[in-house]
Image 1: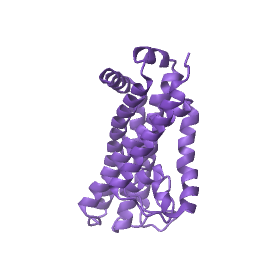
Image 2: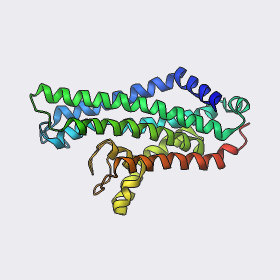
Image 3: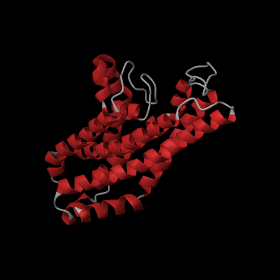
Image 4: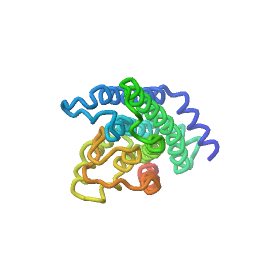
Length: 260
């Protein structure tokens, strides 16, 4: 397992895709947070409440939804890239235990997802608090809540990246897997969450977004309305379970297929 982890860390650290995705997560978060903070309290369109209010500051602080999805994409590219770049044969010749390779990929992707979460939450927090301070507003939320939102984004990103490895290994086709993830977050979770009531809180993107502090009906992508957020530990357990389940199914099915 040590050799598999070392190999995956080397791939992740030296692949330009990793740096590009971290930069993309920070850039998307900066764009959304800046637009929300700049228009907060204006009453126009879909503007959030004033940053002088707890609701408005929370919305600006938690504009990390796209970063969560980018973390899942990082996990997908880690798994699918082996097949897209034709390196899977070499990887599995070096490490014949494919389940071990898949586990190593999930662990390393989680570490990279954690970095994405840190970059995104630092960006959102800096922009939100910077705009609030520039307008002379008092801090509308306690420091503990701000830290909790940041921790939720970081943990959520790490676990969605691990889940992305399982999804990528299961689907194998990189573009199809990425489309599936975005369709799930933007469409399927809204439909299921809007009709399943409290069960919507157990959906993976919703669980991650609400961990990061997104209020019911808010966020980008939006979480379903009427969802009561799970406790932090329960949401962590849900995301961990999704990552394990996807990887286990992939290990029993697609990871065993011929790759030559």
